Each structure stands twice: as C-alpha cells, then as structure tokens.
Length: 241
Ligand code: PGA
Image (cartoon, rainbow, N blue to C red; front, side, top):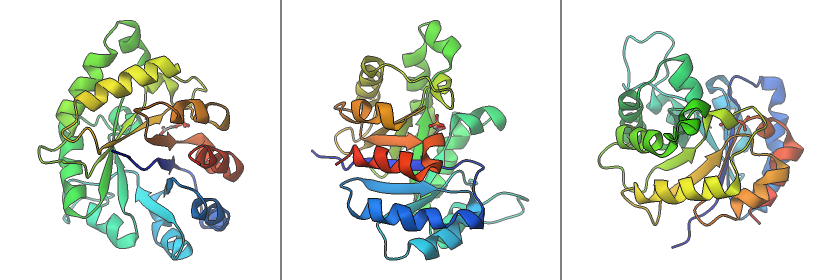
C-alpha cells in the first residue's frame, strides 16, 4: 500500500503578511513534487495564505484548535474556523503545546475529534523527552501518548508525527535506526497501519532529510526551523522526488 509522502512546515510563532511571497516561490516546488506539501502558518496568516495559494498544490494547516465549535473561549480558535480560513490540516499535541500549555493526551484526543468533525486532518504529535529516552521509556511514553491522543474511530484520516522532544530545534536528530524502530513500533499501534502516514520531526534539514525519508515507515517530515527558509524547505521537498 503506498502512502504519499507529506512534507509539512510548522512555522510556529513566525510569519507576517510581509512573508507571503514565500508561497509564490514554494508553489513552483510543490507543483513539481511527488510529495504533498503543507504549510502550517500562524492562524493570523491563514486567510491571506489561502488566497495566495489558490490554484497551487500547496496545502495549509493550523497549529492548534479548541475542542469546541464555538463559544465563550477568549483567544481560542475552533477547528471549523481554521477550515473556514482555508486550512485542511491541523497540528495537535505538539510538544511545545504539551509543555507550554500543559496539554494532556485526553485534551489532544478531544481536539482531534473536533478537527475531524470540522473536516480537518489532525497531525497528532508524540515523542519522548531526553530523560525518558535515557531511562529506556521512549516506547512506553509514545505508546501511552498514542493510546490517549487518538479518537476511537480515527481510521486513516489522521497523520502521526513522531517528534522526539530532545531533537526539536536543537540540531540533534534521532539516528536513522532509532527512527526506523520507533516508526515501525508506532505503526503496530495504529488502527489503520497500512494507510496512516507517520511523519518524523525534529531538526529535519536538507542534510539529513534524504536518509530519513528513505526509511520504510517514514512517510514524510514535520519541519520547523528549516520550513522558514525557502531554499532549505525546497531541498527537503526535493528528497521526496
Ligand atoms: P524543528 O521543529 O524542525 O525546528 O526541530 C520541528 C517541530 O517542532 O515540528
């Protein structure tokens, strides 16, 4: 069963309207790539990015959503609002949200349910800290996060991103053999293992992307820092052929 490679850029809290020209350059690379190309900009840019990307192969996503569709939740954004603004994906349970906002797996699960109801594909992030890896707990932690974060009737309409916390923004990446082992393990825990895409994230750069993307159970990348640089992001996309 072939799974289309997904190269996703996570812009985090970066990006202003003056950066929208990025999408014009990206459209050229996305148009000739076999990979699906996704950018998750801050929600303030989604509508303008959607206008800019109309007619291109670029897909857009949010970086978080609320569990509800509407209501008195100052500062929050509903999944249906992201969809309305042009998003088709949403990153959920990123380690920065799990740590900065104390998000639990059960909250991530409720958000994923809201995203699916709104017609968004959730990209659910899991990954162990350095202490957990050194204590030999990486597989247990990832299993618990997967078990708690995925809604029961998920099917294959969901994407998983394995992002070891210690590799995010640090320039450190897990070794190819560690990634291969963890991705194979994650696949055994999925309701639809043959069709669900499992991305790797954590300091993916032009220099390591090809090796990571060549692994059997790696179906793409969630790219932070390097997705802000068009040349770096384009060369990561190019590794997908
Ligand atoms: P990084 O971020 O590529 O800058 O390590 C990845 C992520 O946090 O999704």
